[in-house]
Image 1 (cartoon, rainbow, N blue to C red):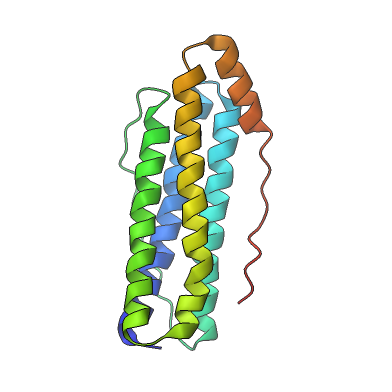
Image 2: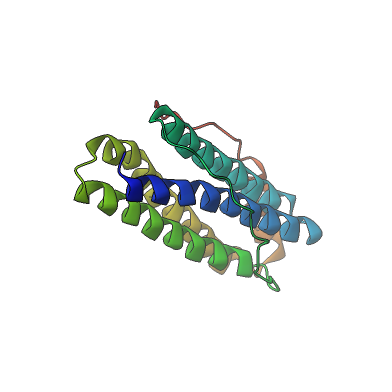
Length: 169
């Protein structure tokens, strides 16, 4: 595997674990606000980010690459309103999309088609993550100021269940 592509994937493993920390922090915020459904939604997001990290970890190992785990930074966002984590989540997903795109571009540059094929799933996943984040923001803008509607939205988010990714390495 190309050294640059390997290094970028290795960095991404650590960034995916940071994403999990960030989403746990968001879940914690909503738990403190009494919104267990919102907390559930972000706890599941955190699990998904851990899965993404482990998929990349396994891909690197399957290709004979050493994985270097770095310290995971403490999330640095301060949330005040119920909308703050939602907008921060969308911003973060857009950032992650840019990181995945950079790895993809580096792999294309060196004709590493196996890695581009591996990353195809992540590119699709990022599209879904951004859409989910935008949908949550839209729903919160529409219903968040009404207590009954907020309760219903919270109940909808509480019903979300975790499902592991179906990517074959």
